[in-house]
Image (cartoon, rainbow, N blue to C red):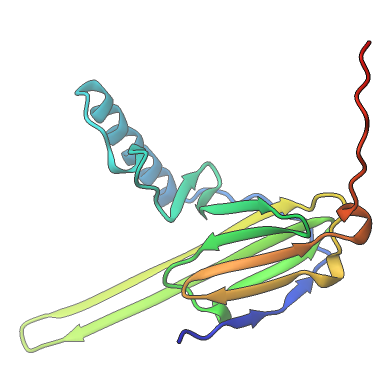
Length: 172
C-alpha cells in the first residue's frame, strides 16, 4: 500500500514575485506557437489542444506551472496539484499575506560512460503558483499531503464560514 506523507505548511512574510522568462523559455514558447499555427493552417489538432488529454504542466507567460483542481466542500476548500516525478522534499507550501504559495523544483542528472561514448543529461525546472485564500479559511488548520505524485492541500473553513442562512424570496 502506498505511503502518505504529511507536509508542513510554513508561514512566510515575503510577497510573491513574478518570474522572468529566460531565453530558453522564450524559445520554447515561440516553438509551441509555431506548431500550433501550423496545425491550425492545415486543420490538424495538436496533443495539447485535444479535449480528452490534458498535460500535467502548462506553459504560461510566467513559465511552467502544474495543473491544479480547486474544489469547495461543505467543510473545506481543497487544492489538488499533480506533480509527477517530484518528491515531498522538493515541494514547499507557504502561507504569506493571505495567499497560499505552492512551489517546487526538480533536478535530475544522468551519466553513462562506455568505451565508445559518453552521455550526460541534466533536467531541471521549478514552478510557483499562488492562490488568494477565500474568506473564512482557518489558516492555522491548513494541511498538505503528498501521495503518488499528487499534492493535496486542505483549507478548512472556520465555523462561521460553514454556517448557511436561508433567505426567503418574496414576490415583488
